Image: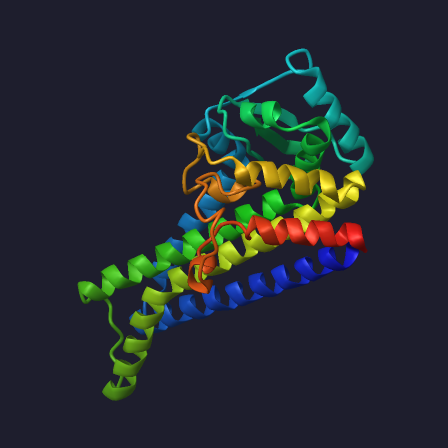
Length: 300
């Protein structure tokens, strides 16, 4: 399990490093081509504003979109005891607990750090899983909190949004012919402009693929960490099996929040094998692979 955690952390940081290189390189190319730093300055200001809003209010926005409501200890003592006991074991502050009234079994964690974290589960999860399986799911979500995945993924989403915004501005500016650099070497200028156009089109797609790849890595890491926390990998493996066999989509989910859930809330591709290209655009790794890795931990 420790090898799984170390591997996923290392690979995720490599992906973030590559993403930052793409963002910086594209920003420099745009500013060079237009010979106008104002575009980059405006984009950075907008990105910082978006980052601050996302950092401080992403949990509230997500909970509002998901129609979740907070529950207290008296509302569901069993759920609270599970959360509290696992937090004591993990050395984490007890997060706020929310419930979504939906019969589809699923759960997610959000917030900016362990002190401002939220664990959210559906009523379907509470009714369809036994206590051991529920512990496995809660441990998985607490691992997202303890590993700072909730902050990590917020930063990645912000970077993807910034890159998409920068690319969109570039394409609009070039379409109207604004501010194009006048180089003495027209051939070099034309080549640079063509490269900039290609990057402007491809960069948001590449950035989205990086975001999804990181999201999938985070799920593997949370599975390993959650299994380590409960000392019983089969609890989470059994929960994932039940969740994957349930074919009811989660009505409260949308594309903006889908990557937060423990399993794809739209139930697409859960029961059938898909090609490598389709897997690139998945928000979650295949549940069969996750269950296999958990069961391998038991055999070791």
